[in-house]
Image 1 (cartoon, rainbow over the protein chains, first blue to last red):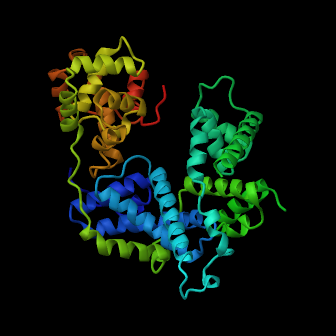
Image 2 (tube, chains in turn cyan, yellow):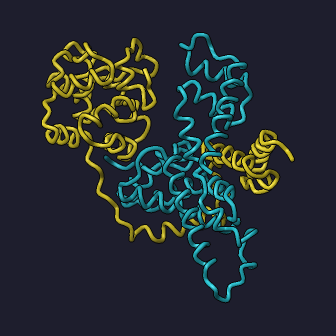
Length: 211
Length: 232
């Protein structure tokens, strides 16, 4: 396959999976400038999202979260270069993010146990003494995905749009009916509320059991 | 104490308005199970978000630019795996390993994807796969899942091997190949699902239908050319 270099506005339209594949293909073709542009677009697109997700965990400062986000992006491309990047980028990045967050906690726990000159008060984040209690973190992405995987494709789309993406019920129902024109009866806004309410209740229960 | 729904709505609004994804200020306003639930919702929202559109000016000097530089500085030391074998190499090899004749594989595949009685059409599409003429981007998870079980290879590896995009191609190439495969298997000769179809598929003069002309698709067409998420 002959590598074809693309301008940045075309790369910006690619999915994460396509962008990663493009960077790998550019490297194989020896076109480092093209590979670096693709990597930059991927990093710019995903860096803040990964930082935000890391910051949703206890005791992770902005600096720590940025460090973790960089590690996740690096791990993704290293895996892609090795031919070990399969499936959806979102799932892959989420798995790596969870592992990197746990690595961070392990390091924190380890340094916590050292009776050396480091003053625990200097550590970022509150209540350092209880860090160990908090380090068995719940893999939030995994819990959400497991619950979502139990849904039909139509209900999953409802959850994605209404629960996670902030669309209103009428708009959600319209999008679901467009995506699944064979639905009979069609999705209504009342159905959207019912499906979302049941999902949230089940998710809450899953999270409580995982904690 | 504010409820989870209100905080989550506020977070989404803030993120969309300011492009700022830090959830700490919102999570600090709830405790216990509410905090975990809000964290899960925010994580789910960010995981599904597209992220920032490319802005080369804003990129300069940003943390993302530093990450890019750091990665590019070390990737010369990373192992670069050779380009994966395409379907034209992988599928016959896996079939040999599984000691399955093509007709036997096709019969089982047709059964597994819920298309018994349509073996000829399945055979024609499978043939397109084996000659590397059908891109994996068009093939459904159901077909690859069935092949994974029959050939004892992960569906992810099968999809990666047949991907035009992974090999450096683009969406137009995917579209052209999918359209061409649909045309090729509609030729009366596809009933033979063999060399005659191959000649057609390899013929550069064969025109692919324009977008929107792939009408009259049945379930087998959709399963082989409708994309990964095709469910029926």
